[in-house]
Length: 148
Image (cartoon, rainbow, N blue to C red):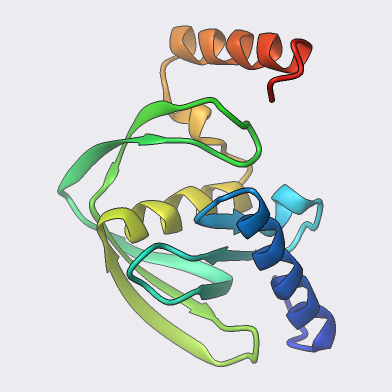
């Protein structure tokens, strides 16, 4: 849990937005930048930049959809991931103001993807073992060849 909503936290959020934009991402979680705090951000086209601190998923939809996901932690690796189509989340912003938010479509997917990072889950953990092994081998080859 993040207990202090201070300038250090706001500086972290600002640095995370810079990092996310440099990587052409649409979401980023603090553990991805080496900070073990329950913080993630999103910036999906058509929506405003958002900050989620100490998030809690309250509800996910029964309806699900598959979408090809990637991740700044595993560059150039993609997989079709089945996730709920909508989510209700409760969190705080960087100023310590609590909010509850309903999202659907791509924004819901980003929220669920980034929240997974806070729980130690990567998108490749959501595919079967055989496919995950293939994706890890592909990533290792890309790293070895200097492509990732």
